[in-house]
Length: 331
Image (cartoon, rainbow, N blue to C red):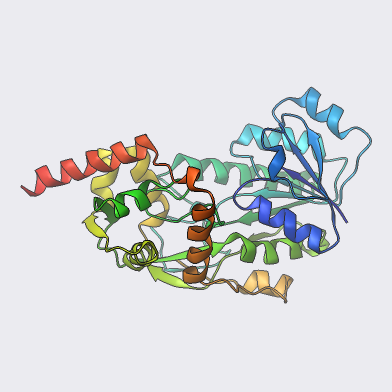
């Protein structure tokens, strides 16, 4: 099976590249070539900017794929370009949406694929919903062979999940320095974290599957942890006690809308996912990496890459700004 990943070296897509290769797939990446050292051995890299139709057409000339996966489509115009570019050269187009598209606030804490899509808090999620609507219309009206996948909070070895970002070392550095960290709400809402290797097991099972056309799936762990527990496990792995300050999500949103949107639009609510659908389509799918094990893997990765233990100055400043406003409010 021949697969094209648009992107392919990101947080989730890299693990899926390895998993597809292990299944014997012929894997292509189409990207700008800015991270050439990350592509696994065996991947064929096509260098082009997907936003440039001329470059993309030149790179894809003469090629056809069983599945095309766009890991970097965020806006409706991205999907419109994808439909035009890939309708004639693939049997399946997979759009990576987001589980944050599910209705917020939720009507029920258990989510399945029939849960309505509606997010008034986060533009990122509304854009993903708009993309899904375009694809569903193209499937109904033009028989465009699409599949939609909605990851939730998925992390790889170079990520450490926290309520204030996962891509950098800001929160771990604050914990190590004995500085306060923010956990939204009372810290007791339930959250689902999924390791990218587990996600990849389910994801590769729907590639090339004609029964998945026109369908939407989420692929997540079934382990639910409180946000307090997530941060305490992180601090335990770092060998220190965390100084947690609980601040309501709506207060964070008022003080720092760009941070608060991902809370009120996603992380503020207890969320557990029903994975019955992906298991019906991929019976062998199961998650094998609980968070405490995935956390060890991530901490070990950062120890092997000490230069990556860098704080994001903007994130650090946002945390301080919100803490100062909260102290002022509380007197």
